[in-house]
Length: 212
Length: 169
Image (cartoon, rainbow over the protein chains, first blue to last red):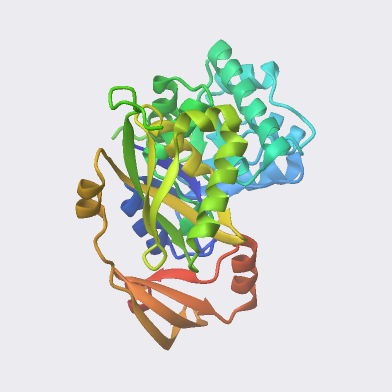
């Protein structure tokens, strides 16, 4: 089962293993990964901003330089700003500790601005009992909004080490247990992430789209 | 009392490898897996799995489960949720599924060569101690405080590199 995990980190950002070691493990598991170290063009960048100003500053720095941009959706103002700015590829789904929930307004904006919503499996994997039931409820609610408003979902692991990566068929079965249909799971695991990666490669210069 | 063969549940055997910096015992693995599966699927769902850890090689971290033939997917999904055993970071990789134990062992139980070593290395100006090497991978113990803090955060023992990382400037 093909799987492209766009949100992983190596030693160059907040991870533990070198990029080569992460790539080796990904190859062993039969998956592809995108490293969010923000080091050079082609790689992704993960922006964690405390305020809208910080977010706009970081976005202007990385737009056109990074292969793709992921914004942390924990802060409500930052997340809502992310849905209005050009250049954002993915926004992470807010957790239950963030104080706001991904709602219909955000879903409509995500569809309008063609921003994908990231379902981080790390939150599901590292939670337990009651916390996990609430995380699962949040994922199901996002899935219902996706079916109604049509925005795209991207599934990632947020892996900061070799043991955070997961095999494609295991992720697929996990998504099926969370009520994703086969098509929805395949799309979230590979089709949508590939589109994000390809659109990033073709938009290297600000405002200019290069036809490959 | 044994059921007649026509009524016995059909089984599959799922081979897995457990990736971990340190070894885990068979009882630790059993405890962690049952807890995870029971928490996720509940007692009723787990009973349908007909799940049992048949064999586990503590040296290689390799083993296989028995599971009901129509619940293999659920088991794979549950294995993806396991991230630690007794505060040690782990991940479970499913290598394959088979109908018989013999076929499974022939296909998936090949030995992996691990070379234990103890030498000083340097990566990006940071000194480390290479501890073991296998398949071109090197596991190292860092001296740098920041790296040690990251290892503690991820509940890992070693930083992972490749031999190529040590060759490049």
